[in-house]
Amino acid sequence: MVALDTVDLRIDKGEMVSLVGPSGSGKSTLLNLIGGLDRPSSGDVEVDGARLAGISDDELTRIRRDKIGFIFQFFNLLPTLSCLENVSLPLHLRGWPAAKIADRAKELLTLVKLDKRMEHLPDELSGGERQRVAIARALSVYPPILLADEPTGNLDSSTGAEILDLLRDVHQSLNATVLIVTHDRGVAEACPRRIALKDGLVVKDERG
Image 1 (cartoon, rainbow, N blue to C red):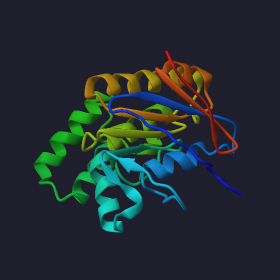
Image 2: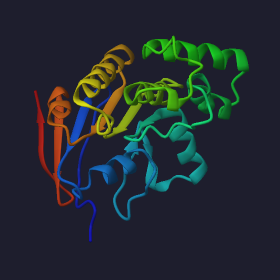
Image 3: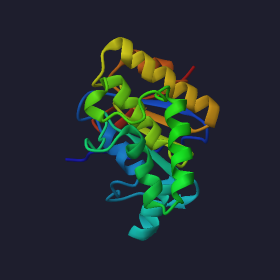
């Protein structure tokens, strides 16, 4: 079984794109290939001038660390760490000074409107608040590319709309390239470009 078949796509810097299609169509596989979490069995993926198929694991790790922010449906926050500590973690892994880490994490939590919840644990937050923490963590190094896999899929419609508004704000304020996998028609149609997959093939690519 082929997850993706002869997919040929170019996504330009600063675009906000949705990936839609039924379960098993290849959406998450494509997102994982772009994010360097998987490698293609054939063909190539190029991210900001770097061809992912031919680079070492260390180089791939560096690209993911420096250029790509990931947002997942189930948040993936560490339950024993506060909001501030969850957002700070990627920066500790980069070896930043403690004072600089604290300033950046506070700045990001303020950006996602959680400046009053910095010391709370994930279990003390609503689903929407946890997703905001996850977005702040993904933005820790202000990556040029933001990949979101069903970021509203685990939320009610009202909270999902708030998260979508936040992603649009991030896209506009940071000029980040944003790619969103979604089953939500409203989320998909809010993106200026919409790509539809079916059976591993691109069946629609429209703008406007």
